[in-house]
Image (tube, rainbow, N blue to C red; front, side):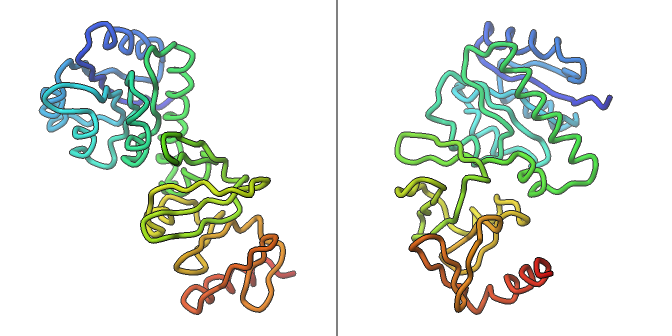
Length: 241
């Protein structure tokens, strides 16, 4: 069994002790060090290869979010915090998970199993976007709420400058969240979603009717632009008998 090297960072001694205790119960986690100061952790990372960091967010001197922005993208994070207001920012930093304190061992173990699946796929040569497809969901923030949306429940996305409307099955009202279409496209698995217009990304498995360069979802007709038409036609050719 391949082991995952990790460290834990939290300025609260009791919270740090709980995370360390949880880590030591997982046989495939290799705890290299624990820190109550993120600055010391950054120095440690300069000379040591760490795959996974259990990271508190609300810390003095250097917040967990600021710390995460300074990391190599190959070093993954599971945020551990008492504040859910940072969740969307955490996922925008490509965190593997976001755990709210107090963290039970059951919740912790489930999160770590997800991390193990990530590294197993990575070691097998899968790309990040393929891994995202295996996760089968995404998180979006609409107003003060964070929504977990399953990929198989999505119909299409509509871009509006710096905002996106997400349309799902069985709901007439879209989820509106802050994002550019480019940033969204990079996070979606390409085998499930395709951009067909500067303002639209569609769920490929949900396409039922195409008429005159338009994809029909109920009463909505989504145009296929000239820029994206060749790629979409290539997709269709693979599906024709």
